[in-house]
Length: 97
Image (cartoon, rainbow, N blue to C red; front, side):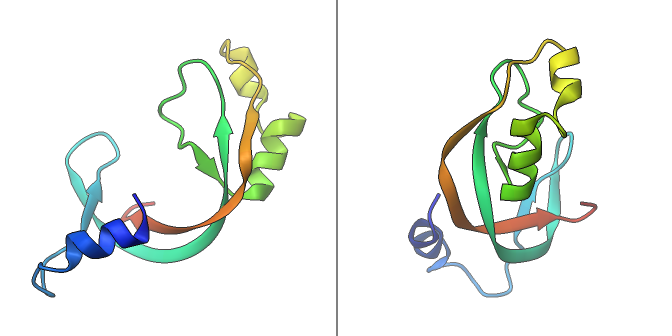
């Protein structure tokens, strides 16, 4: 989703409507924080859907050089690969995060 797509979706909604995001295991959670961050997309291979596709560039560097990803290999994961270049994104964080 892009900011333009989000604006179009929000255009007709009342200003007091709550904004929610997916909960940790299920349900929905309130947005605790919204901000802009530089992020790097990763391809971790294997079955690691529980990890987000995007991390900070610093976290990506740790995963690529092995400092942050040893447990992935122990669990049978594939080496992490960068996807493209870092981008700037709007990030919504759920409460409890």
